[in-house]
Image (tube, rainbow, N blue to C red; front, side):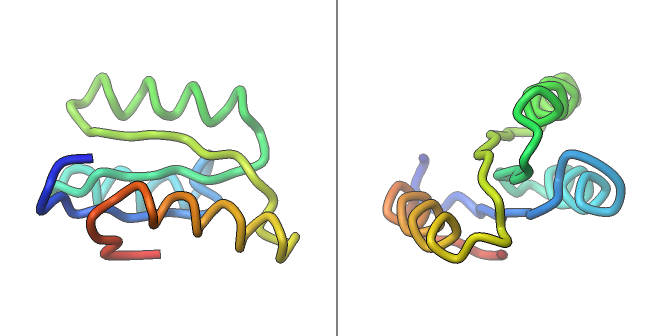
Length: 86
């Protein structure tokens, strides 16, 4: 990821309020990391955001599983300069 990049991780981002938040943050210049448990929906949502000029990625894991959250958030944070929102 680029230096000085503003990054937000949004859980539940494959639909409803989570996707709306991801869209708004993306339009405000954030790179958005979408999270959910439906990989197919996640890929579709990334395509939709990318088509609007928003930089987006999808990482599927279940936020009700503490081990999965710890492992995946740790990986994501290590791969970026700064996490602005979670």
